Image 1: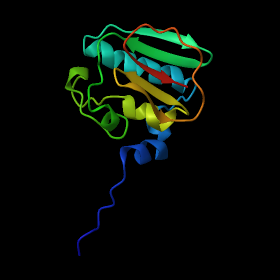
Image 2 (image 1 turned 60 degrees about the vertical axis):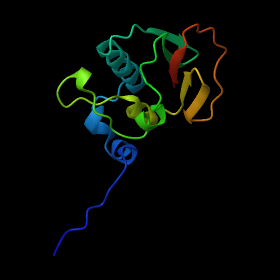
Image 3 (image 1 turned 90 degrees about the vertical axis):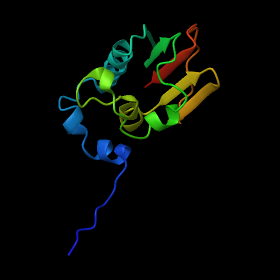
Length: 131
């Protein structure tokens, strides 16, 4: 008899096992910010990080996410630039942050959450806001 495989989304798996990825759970928001910054640096993208009213904003003039950005917030995406068996970390933001907002040349996109953004003076073209 064949076993039936149950397929779960990356978001479901991340939410089900948070201790696997953040065992200390002391400052997960800061850890997530650092993971995305590290991804950007591995891509050779210079970023600035801003902290505004409990939000972190990771911003750059160069688009490090690309046109398929929605996909990167939903599933595990291979990331060879980060090393062997590395994945991009945008999906972690969608799983563990209460608010995620992304801005690119096409506008501001709410990934999750409903909290209103603070007043911003970010000059870079591309940014992700997390809270």
